[in-house]
Image 1 (cartoon, rainbow, N blue to C red):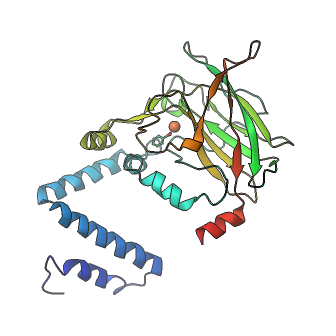
Image 2 (image 1 turned 30 degrees about the vertical axis):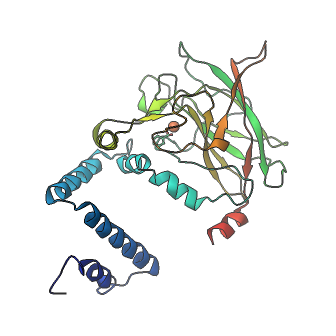
Image 3 (image 1 turned 60 degrees about the vertical axis):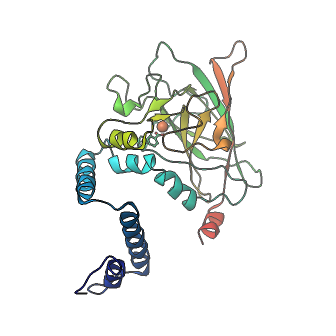
Length: 290
Ligand code: BEZ
Ligand code: FE
């Protein structure tokens, strides 16, 4: 192509795909759509050269910020609603299985393995409310799933996850539990509080550019796994929390909202949360993907 114009540049780039190297059909599909949408976006907004340079500088700064503690591009994807969209496409609800939602950047692998009913709380906070979390894990036909693991993690009453707070013990408010012979799980945790996602640097700039806020409603994170079933990455939201209707990362689903009730007199905790999960089978996941 020797005479590129506004009208033919998109076809020129798409026509170059695979010309000088082997690419897969998936690479072709992705690059064709990417170039089409990117060029369409640039034309639609009439992007100026100054704006193009500002965007390049912005992405470079986001890359420089990324390290093993902070993955800036996941955060940017979350703020733009991309992670929740990818999750919904990857995990369609085909039956009565529980809905998934975003993983977020604060999960740590291999949390402490704790017995049923144990507490994840390693440090007390003045304003904490303890909660007994319990429920059943079942398959889509209502049969209990025995020996399913549940990884759970949450922020402390100061709004910080332990790995971002030098004053919390290692793996505070994290644990791995297992369902018993009835598919029942139970643990003690703290009522999760709303918190702002990291809002300094490039994530904050994007929120500011969008006129949005950084806050998430109070939630408990879960990953449920059992061989033969589709893994479930999800969150349970506090029905009385602020920000349920305008979560900064758009991850709230009605079916994932749970009620933190006052515990009965004599109970070991201040509150009780009862929440059941339904796991789809791995076969259903394969069919849905197809
Ligand atoms: C979280 O829930 O931990 C989270 C999700 C998306 C972005 C930031 C935090
Ligand atoms: Fe979170």
